[in-house]
Image (cartoon, rainbow, N blue to C red; front, side, top):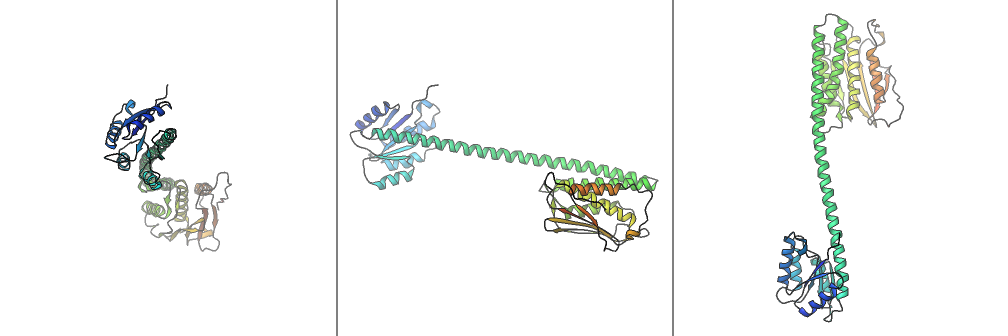
Length: 371
């Protein structure tokens, strides 16, 4: 495809000089259009910017300073106000440098001093070429910035849509898990055998622990983290409601607002559920007693403890126990890369977990150990 011949609009009331410019720049590959006044030049530029026909397009303007009517500086100001106006090379016979500064500040791409014999025409050609390159770079920069803004807008729209979909998924998953927990509760209530009732109640607590995370993510502004004190408060309230009689009436929570990712929050919730239910079953054989859940930050780590003031090591082994709870605690502790210890100085039973606020780096070996 042949390259289009660039068009230069020469605005000058000197017709003889305009013909010299026409001949000189035509030999250099330009199409020259002459306007004898600032008003005529402005009209041509407005028409060129308004029409879509590329043949009438003006690529660059050479503007003389001294003209009757509108002078060069006044014309320059009005050209700069036209949307999509071409670059302007300001031309004058004056040697006064302040005029050059004024023209450049007003928006001229370049400035040169002319003579009446046309010797400045090669310089005008160089200035026009530079103005065209500068205009092309400016257009490329503006297009690139527009594309960046458009990409950001598209990314923001996609991110908002993704967040909405994630909220909807969490909402549906949370509802489905809550339905499952409710069905387990109904089944446990109607079970005749204590072993079956206990197994269904334990399963219900585990499902509720996961459901609470999804419920929190649905209502939270941040889909990437769960605030543990709020989560544990809701989880323990679920345990209170699901407990038989008043055996959890003295279940307490003391927790700091620590944020962790949802997957690890699930692990924390399941551990708390298992250890609390274990304390309910074994710590106080003949009565209800206090069970304390505490969560505190310790530098880069988090300390979680579940404690009771019950029989401690004097608890009798239950022959019906399957050890499932201990295996679940060990698995979830491994997921957290947590250290699990029993506090020997505590009267009763106190289990302490220590894990990092942030997930362990990939490939790190777990240091978890269940007691």
